[in-house]
Image 1 (tube, rainbow, N blue to C red):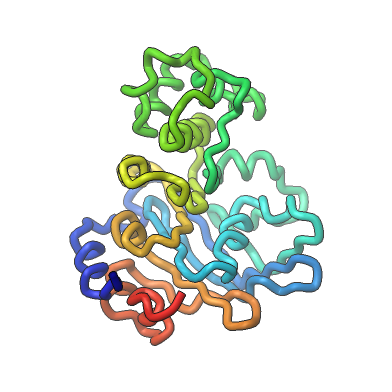
Image 2: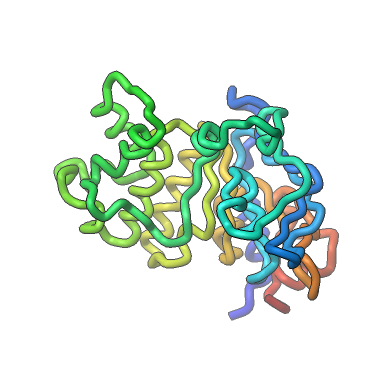
Length: 279
């Protein structure tokens, strides 16, 4: 069944769009002229994008257009890959996270990440998984029991695991494991949460619960999500950025409020993609 722009526009239009900057979260996250390479291969070209504080931005586009590479530049995970290189600026509250002397560990505490495949620590219990980031970052918290409950509540998992906190994280279902990973990311109190296709391996019921969690979390933080699911982008995001690679490096074709992307995009290539004509 082909997705029509009107159906996606109605989904996006039925959401209450968050107004940027209404929460006391700082000035948000911005990129200025970001380019990325793997060795000599130029994979991302000149991406400038603002992620307003307290909003959800969806990154959409075909496979291989640089969405996942881009999201990994936002908390300096791109540099983990051998031969990776980057040009441009990524600004968090107005300061470039790639500036010489920047403490990368502190950046990753402020800009958390949830990956495509759930990755709880298999040898740890559910409770230990949630609090593991504190130990790794050597952060002290006075009442970890309250923090544990708070993170699991915010991740939409508390009611399902409150009597199982001593079980191993691997005993949970795939959807529960992903929400456990979200709870783990929340424990260090990030300002921004990056999500790279967090529902791609999940069933529709688990996907719905993750989307509910995203909507709840966006009240207190900035969220950036990579998704191949147009309906998901329409359901959860305030803004959408469309990426495309036409034989060369990936570029950002267009960014706008989500209901505009799905109802009246400015670029014909965007319309072709969101209506299922290609990609």
